[in-house]
Amino acid sequence: MKAATAHKNDWPARFRIKHRWIGAQHAPFLIAELSGNHQQRLENAIRLIDAAADAGADAVKLQTYTPETITLRVRNKRFRVGDGLWSGRYLHDLYAEAMTPWEWHRPLALRAHERGLIAFSTPFDESAVDFLEEHMRPPLYKIASFEVNHLPLLSRVGATGKPVIMSTGMATEPEITVAVRTLRRAGCPALVLLKCVSAYPARAEDFNLRALELLRRRFRTPVGISDHTTSDEVALGAIALGGCVVEKHLALDRASGAIDSGFSLEPDEFSRLVKTARTLHAALGRPVLGPTRQDRSQRRFRRSIFVSRNVQRGETFTPDNLRIVRPADGLDPSRWIDILGSKAGRSLKAGHPLRESDIG
Image (cartoon, rainbow, N blue to C red; front, side):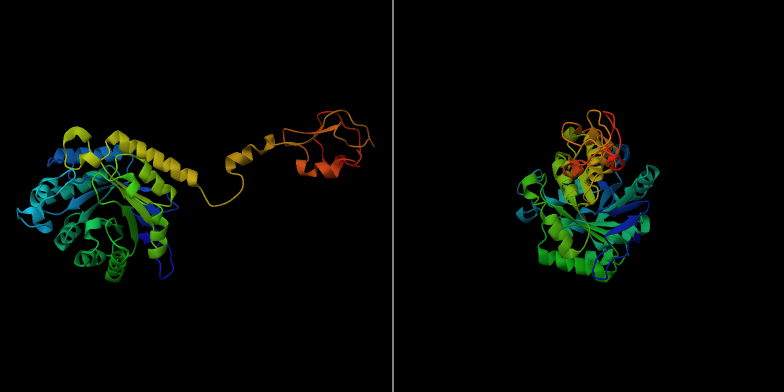
């Protein structure tokens, strides 16, 4: 990881993961989240990685947990989902269906590498971090919004010395403050904070994207979005507001019944997002006023002062023998008032672009 120089109280405004710089001045870092959309079939997980690569993603992200590392095998209402996509499901059953088998991590990481993708994961407890360090060696980590207050996990992740991307969806500002401090003290060298809505699917109107700038200024980190909608608008809005990371779930087919498919993009939709996101970022440009490169190439078709009928030496310039017309080969129109009433220093033909040397 290579980071740009920053003030001691700031996190790096940009940093590099392998071949890819992450920061607001760079094209958005686009992450395809595989989650449980593989439906417990390794061949589906590999197809998802291939689809992410074909769509132009920069990275694929796994989730590393088992039902036992994330909940208890208890079947009462405390452990049952009350509403949403998974209404009525018990947590242990849900996570058993959604987990990515740990023995898949290495072959999936190798496949991602073969396809030019950065592979990393979201660990949900310290044992997952230890496993990932030994068997996958990811170049960065993701912290889920649900785990922002899991300080032992954050300390373990920070101690790896690797950059972290952390979602902040349900976290309060004091909780984010403690989490950021914990990561820094543990040794985390770079951090990106993501806005998200921890609902599945999420509603666009709940994202409060204007808070991205507040998040960036308050915690002095790059920012981005983890988007659980099935459209592009939220992600594109985040990029327009300075977001440098976009995370979206990917499914082979939303109608497949895969556990997270209801709020995932299909491959062609992800491909469209990639193209649109990069076009949007390129259009943002730099905060400067003045003509762009394309504008400068067209400047000669602005107006300038031309002789509109033949003028003899010594003749007075008037609106009858001068015009402000295109192209811009003559004097700038801002000189019009100064030139009217002056005399021609030599004879000029109609269609001649007036020059300073033409004025007597």
